[in-house]
Amino acid sequence: MSKKWNFTELNQINWNERRKQSVHQKVIMDIDKLESKRERKHVVAYLTSCALFLIVIFAAYQFFMSEAQNPAVGDDEKIDIVDENKETINDREKEIQINDDYKNLRYYGTISSSEDYYKIAMTDVNAMYFIPVNSPATVEIVQNVNFESHLNSDYRIQFGLQTARSDIPLQSYEIKDNHLHLYFNKNNLMNLRGSTGSSMGIFSIHTFAENFKDQVTHYTAYGDGEPFIHEGEGFDIVNVPIETDLKYLPIRTHSGVFLQQQYNYQQHTIEEVLGQFFALHKLAITDEEIDFSMFSLKNIEESSGTTVLRLTGDLNDAFEKNEIEIGSLKKLIVHGVGANVREQLDHDQAKIYLNDQLLFDGNLNHIKINDLNDHIFSLSENSLRAKLITTASAVFTHLENEAWELLMRFVHPDKGLLFSTYAFVDQEQDVTFTKEEVAAFASNENTYLFGQHYAKDGFVYEFTPKEFIDSLLMNYEQNMEKKKVPYEIVTFNQVYQPSGGIINNIGEAYPEGRYVEFFAPAPSEEQEYLWQALRFVFEEGENRQWYLVAIVRDVHSP
Image (tube, rainbow, N blue to C red; front, side, top):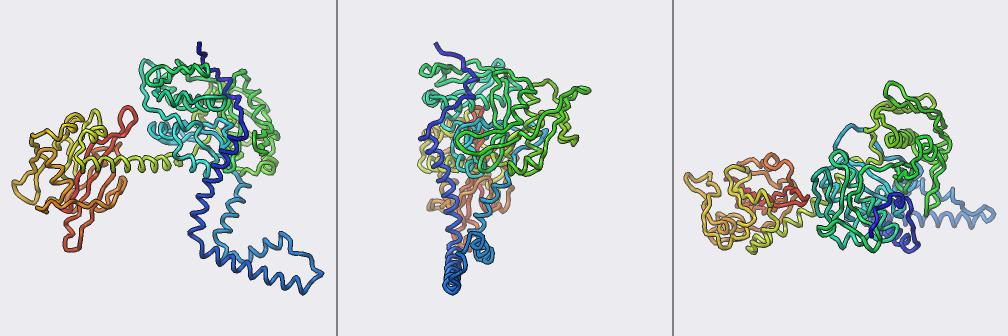
């Protein structure tokens, strides 16, 4: 018989040396890739630097031979030599400065009343800690980021983080009867094995579910449509409550300071939790530590519905011991104390004082711990860009090869596929086909009015679907020999060349959509009117998949 997942086990993660070395090697490879790109751009500067360095060494050697009683050149003198050649060292010096920035770590977090923040489950590069990250995003982006690994190299380099479990992509979800239903591939869920693997997987799933806590109270994970029971590990993910008792303690990576999440299974009081927060934290695996033992809670009181916390401690001492910016130290204290108070007490409003200095006065729900700001959104948008460009390329290939049943698989199940002869989309007038109709293009002999030629009075585009695609999309309209349009340039959500006569209104027609443009430049200045563009418009469906909703043609002038 399976057991309900015990959240106390999420605080108990084991680690082995082989996995530690594996993750460490990934980080080194990511950094090496970044540095190799930088070094290739500055080969000349580097060679020049080497030459100057050899000259300096030669001069120093001559000086040493003539002054045999002088001591050898020390490390400080070598640094002075580098300083004297700052203008020629350029990027090699910049790399040293980047490493020196480690001495001034900062905490990532913000205060915001925005409701567009979502949680993402992350961990350190050693996969030892649960680090919930907040970011302004969309549910689609969170779904994409939370369960997949394609951006992990960026996270590791920029923040020293990675997604908690990146090999269990969420296929879809739905909310029904005050319950969140999460659908996965069963084989992926079966990979939740061992202490670390299971814990990180559950943390990832639970964190995603927390984004819906205002709508549901429980969630269930499904493997291939069946409520998931892991018989091998002896647990299930069925009817799991979203609300859990949490506490937050500081953690540092090589690139920043964050708050790690632990499950307060022993029901510690707020005084006990803050006592744990204001302590010396020695990090597992590494020799690093964060020392907050110079701070303490003086007292907590309630005043007019507001929780007032008074703290004591020495910020300068904390800066010297932790090498964290003073501003970040204050923010870390506010977020750590505020997040823990929010978990333990009922009041939303709080004031936090440090040595009689007011650090915070506001709504605790506005505290967004571990906020990566727009980094998640920008990285995810780049990921979506790559995904949709690949999808658009497949769509184009199916159009070109008249593979209608394959094309059908990309079409939106509810909205179908719209064809617009010109840049301006008219959803009331433009011809739209269902998925099933797209699959039957080969046998469809019916003609449809796809629009009119604005430069020729009374001329209309009346074709079968197959004729329209062949005559206007794949080949030049003006060329009676059916010369193929050489689409060479691809852009994402951007027009390569504005139309000469009709406005592109895709942004208004599909405000939540994205489009990929295939552009064919004019073959010559004499034939400047022969450029043409195809825009493949995608929208997100209810199952969080992106579907083709429109193919829009644009030309020099209608």
